Length: 107
Image (cartoon, rainbow, N blue to C red; front, side, top):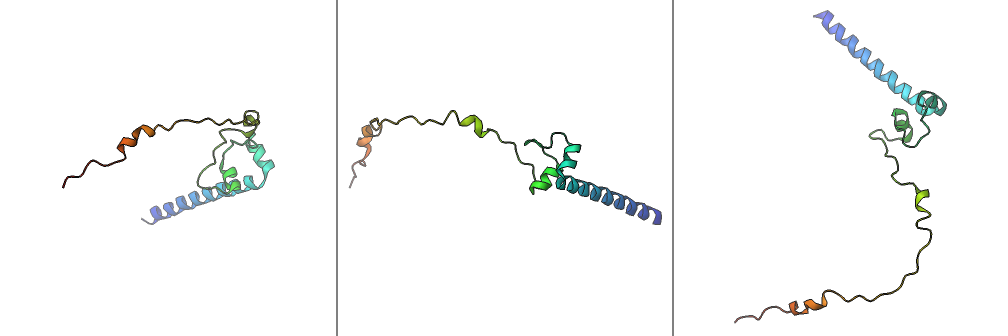
């Protein structure tokens, strides 16, 4: 029974050392952009997500989403605002004025 407990303790120690080494490696990658670039060639892209970029950005729970629309594509479309003209539109509720009054009360 003693050897079984001893082997469980060795397994736990091995897992703890393995996880600690991985965390320290991710911390080193987040602190050194040159080292991160060597490990991941696309490390300078916006949509790149890994443990090092999550640690560097401070979001440990989830990765940030890449932007859906870039601002440069919208500038030519909305750079000129057309002149507004006033236009009178009849209210569609004017025909419902017969519904303003309640039915006659019975006494």
